[in-house]
Length: 609
Image 1 (cartoon, rainbow, N blue to C red):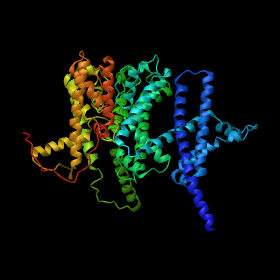
Image 2: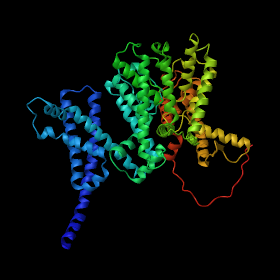
Image 3: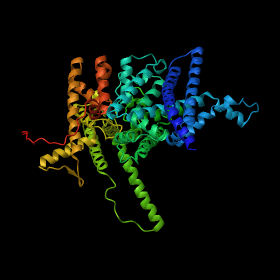
Image 4: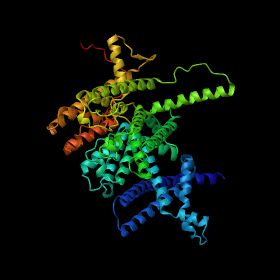
C-alpha cells in the first residue's frame, strides 16, 4: 500500500506541471476566442455582409463554442477540486446551459411537434448560442482583467487604461457604417466616444442627425459603462459570476469602490448596480408618463426615448436624441415634470453611491423600528445619532446650498432675459433645471451663449465644484470643496484642527482636497493657454467655459465645440479623460510613489502673509 501511495504521489508530481501548462494554454485560447466572438458580432452588425461572410462568421462562432466547451471540460476533468472551489453557483449554471447546447448535436430533431421539439429548436437556436457565448466571453474577460490586479499592477494605472481601452473600442464602433447616417471622421468619433465614456456630453457634431439607432445604442452603452466605472462592472462580474478572487484583488477593488470591508465588498458592488438599475428604471417610467402621446412617437419610440434620457441623466452625461438637446420645441411647453424628473435623476446620480447606500441603511433602520412597534406596541424612544455619516451630511448640505443659490441666481439674472415670455412656473422650473445641469450633466434647454455674464459665472463655479465623490458626476467634487472651505475657516479662526459635526477631519483628507484644487487650477490654466493660442477667434470666456466643462465632465458649451480644430478637439477630449479618471488617480498611476521614511526632518517655517 505504501508503494502504491508513493507511486500516486510521484505520478501526481510528474503530471501536474503538464496539466497546468495545458490549462494555461486553454485559458489563453479562451481569452482569444472571447475577443474574436465580440469582434465577429461587431462586424456582423456594423457592416452590411455578404452570404459568404455570414457563413465564415458562423464557422467562427462554432469554433468559439468548441473552445469554451473544451476549456470547461478540461478544467472539470483535470482539476475538479480547484474548479469546484473557484466556480460560483451561477458559473455552474452557465456551464450546465453550455452543455445543453450538445443536445441538438447528440439527438436528432424530434419529428412529433410539441414541447420536446420546441425545446430542441430553442437549444439549437442561434440566439441562444450567441447570447450564452457572449455572456461567457464578457465574464471571462472580466475575470482576466481583475486577475491583472493580482500581479501587483498599479490600480490607478489599470483604472486609467481600462477607460482608455473602452474609449478606443467606442471610437471604432461609432465609425461603423451602420452607426452613422453619412459617416464620421476619426477625430469626431474619438471625441464623441470620449464624451460618452467620460459621461460629459460635449459633442463636436449634431448627434441627432449624425447617428442612427445603432449609433445611439452604442452611445448609451458607453455612457452606462463610463457612469458606473469600468472596474466596477468587471469586478462585479468577476466576483459574482466567476467565484473567488485573490485577497489582493479584493483589497484593490475595495479601495476603488470605497467599501468598508472585504466582507461587504460584493454587497457594495451589488448595491451600486442595484441602485443604478432601480433609479434609472423609475426615471424611465416617470419620463414616459410625462411625454406619452405628446411627441408623435409610437410606444416603442417613447420607451426608448425615456430609457435613453433616464440613463443619460442619472449618469450625468447630457446626451439627447433630440435636435437642440432638451431645448427642443416639443418639450419646452407643457413638460415641466419632464425637466424636474431629469433634474432629480441628475442630483441622485451626482451625490454618490456611498450616500445612496447610507440612505438604504437609514430607511431599513426606520422600517425595522416601525415593525418592532407593530409587533410589541412599544415605541423605541432611543435615538441613533449617527444615522447620517459625516460624508452624507457634508455632501447633502453643500449640494442643497449650491442648488438653492444656483436656482435663485439664474432666476434673478435670466427672469426677463432668456426666460422672457415664459410663465412663472416655467421660469422657476427652468431655473432649477439649469442649476442642476452644471452639476456635470450638460443638458441644455436654452441657448447658453445667450445667457448673461453673471449667469455664466454661476455656471462656471457650479461646473468646477461638480458632484459628490464616488458618483457619476465630475468636478473637484463637493467633498473636496467642503473640506477646503472648512480648512479655510479653521485657518481664519486660528484653530489647529478642522472640525465639523463633532468630528475632526483627517489630515489625509485635507491634503488630498488641497492637492485636487491646486491641480485643477494648474491643469485648467495650461489647457486654456494652449487652446487660446490654437483658437484665436474664440473669446477667453468661451475657451475657459469649454475647458471647465470638459475637465468637470459637464458637457455645457457656448456653441464652440463644433468650431474647434482637430488639435483643439483632441485636447478637449484629453481634458474629459483626465476629469473622469480623476487628477489624483491619474497622477498616482503615472508618478512613482515614494516609500514612507521613518526619519523626520526638522520643521521650518515659511512666511505666508
